[in-house]
Image (cartoon, rainbow, N blue to C red; front, side):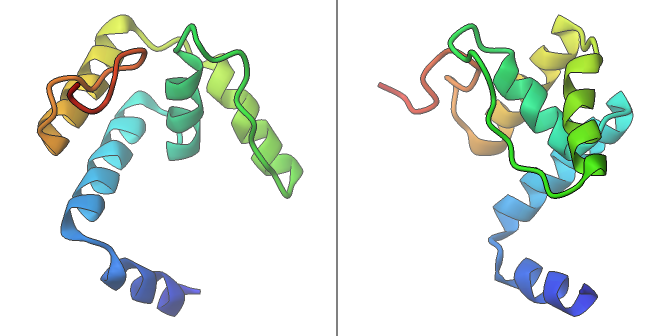
Length: 102
C-alpha cells in the first residue's frame, strides 16, 4: 500500500500536496480527522441539508458521526477560510459565497 501512496502522491501538483498537508495540520490541532473536517466544513452551510458519505466499515461510520460531535468555534472556521483563501489566492473563499470571482 505504501508504494501505491507514493506513486499517487508523486502525480499530485505541489499546490495540492501543500493544501492537504496544511489541512491535515489544522485537523490534527483541532483533534479531528481530515474526513471529519471535510464533513463538518460542508455541514456548516445553511444551504446543505445533509452530507452524503459512503462508508465500508463501522469504524468509518463512527468517524463520520464524529464530525457532528465536535463543536468547532467560529474562530476556528475563520482560520480555515483564511488558510484556504491564502492558499489559492482567491478573496471569495468561504462557505456560502462563490469560490470563484464573479
